[in-house]
Amino acid sequence: MLAIEILTDYEDFKALKEEWNRLAAEAGMSVFQTWQWSWHWWQEHRKGKKLLIITARDAAGLVALAPLYVTSTFLGLPLKVVSFIGTEGTDYLDVIAAPARHDAVSAILKELFSLSKWDAIDLHQIPQPSDTGELVRQLAFAKNLTGEVLAQDTSYARALDSSWDVFFAGLSKKFRTNVQYYRRRLERDYNLVIRQSDCESVTEDMRLFFKLHQKRFLNKKKPGAYLNPKFRRFHSELAKDLCASGWLRLYILEVDSKPIAALYGFTFGGSFYYYLGGFEPDWGRLSVSTVLIAQSIEDAIGQGLARYDFLRGDEPYKQKWGAVAFGNRRVIIGRTGKKSGVVKKLLAIENDVSNQAKEIMQKS
Image 1 (cartoon, rainbow, N blue to C red):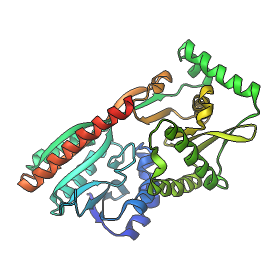
Image 2: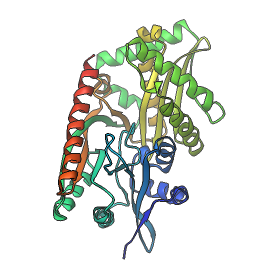
Image 3: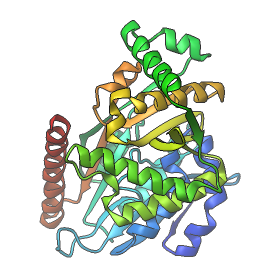
Image 4: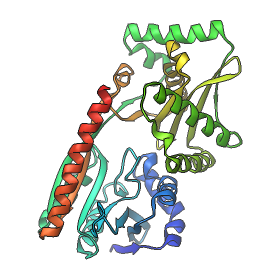
């Protein structure tokens, strides 16, 4: 027998930490479904939002949860839209459930649909092969709600081999030659050091990473992710918490004691997640980012990880590493009334505009 509970209190959210992370690990979810990610995201983005965490428990404990919130306005209008915690700036979002517990996911969704406090449900970045999006749509149809599943971002990932030598041999000859050349050049001409941040240095190293990331993008006349103070605060606090949990992987590449490149990533559940990088523009000629990626992959294999995830974005370099594309989906559910229909249509238009903007940015 499942017990469904709706949590709207800050302290209840805080108290879920241990159960939440155990469930995320058991479910094979990504680092983006950890309690830490959701908690720190909420600290920076909660204004104008109300918590709506729905849990499902059986006799053994927590078996599923949907980390959600509801807005009080949309586009300046008094419209209530339900979304995943983490909707802005998070690569993968989903309902978290123990393996084969579709019954618990269905029970949570039915509870959500029965609530009167929403005009639309807007669930972003559900990654394939998750079947949550289609399950949401089917259950919505059965409840006489309207629903559609839209294409959102494309992500790239690949399986890791048993050794670095086997992995490296599987890459194209030209790319292997380039990777080796840049590493040898750096080692020959400079005192090369590649280090990982620890919990004592993480605060200062994150500041360094922000600086290098911004330099890279400003050189390309693009804003970069970390111009936004809210985004910087979120990742500064998140990095410290993930470091304490052993999941942070922040690489710094130094030449002659000068830091010139950084790679910001995470490990969780057998996967490495390459989130963002940065480097001094003058050092782009020696592909310092490629050298860092190679080091992070070699380390991931050495740690016994099974998968390397390059996350969202169609950047061509990902395929050079053998990564394979898969799609993220966005699910929009509306009621049959006129008000809800307008919100649903606006959300679909916003999705199209967002996808077109990303294509333009990718080509620029």
